Length: 398
Image 1: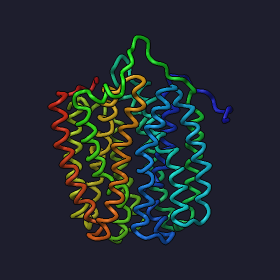
Image 2: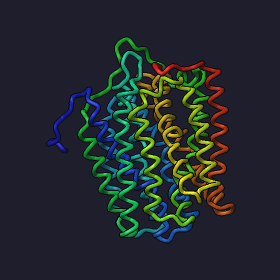
Image 3: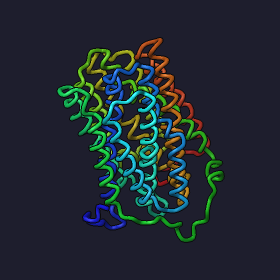
């Protein structure tokens, strides 16, 4: 399949850049506009909360299952190809009207195959850019920035498109974006990842028992839980405040512009603090960002400034986490380490955040989600302090 694509060198990072760009281009309109499409289909706020939580629910089991399989076989690329192709086929079902139970089943199957694609890709990329135990943040940033660019392009174009054309074309765009993902995964060099020579096998239990690992995952849990409100309810919140779909897209785009800038220049900024130091900065910035969003969203310029903090609350946090995971979960544990990061950070939090957020918004209004998010950032800040005490100042070279 796609044999006409020129095969890249096994050490090339460009195919990963293409995968990152296409995958996050898909996410760029799917995540912000899925709630609006569901609203357009006539679903209630609670039904929207349930359906949008399906993706997070699949992240509670699918990443680890795929991660275990990829660690065991070393065939990360073949599994990426399989997952992308099946997801594309499943997306065609969205073209027809469905009740919420049937839509839930389709989304469950689709997300089961896409939710582990980035953890497996990140594991393969981390293996590629780690040399002699050192995680190359510059090469990693050059790849990851294309994901941000892909997200930025689609979130801007989709906002304008849906403003003019309505939400009816949403299912077709889902399939087209997944087609781009499938093309990119078939461009990856089909290289099996073997256990490095001289490396002894470390069990997952031993890796998880290392000092600080539990504090790391606890901090990740609350930090990402704080972001769930922004991912699930942000568009609905701005829509309720009277912002147009175009402005909603611009607000999402401003966050991603800040993210792009960080990934481009992160190699200049990261040496300023240790990895755990950047996690503290990210948590503090999260408290400010979500507090401003909940209290002062009527002032568009303050809302825009809060969105720009995404450079710290997501991009800096993400790079620090990926580097720490490469330190704590080396070699054939890398896939499962990434999977645990996805499950704890983006799976359990997504289910809890979406469902609890639905209850909160129903009884206390949409702004209440962001007040709770600010509190979660405070808890994450405390847990990172415990991580620093357990591990010391983990250097960038880790």
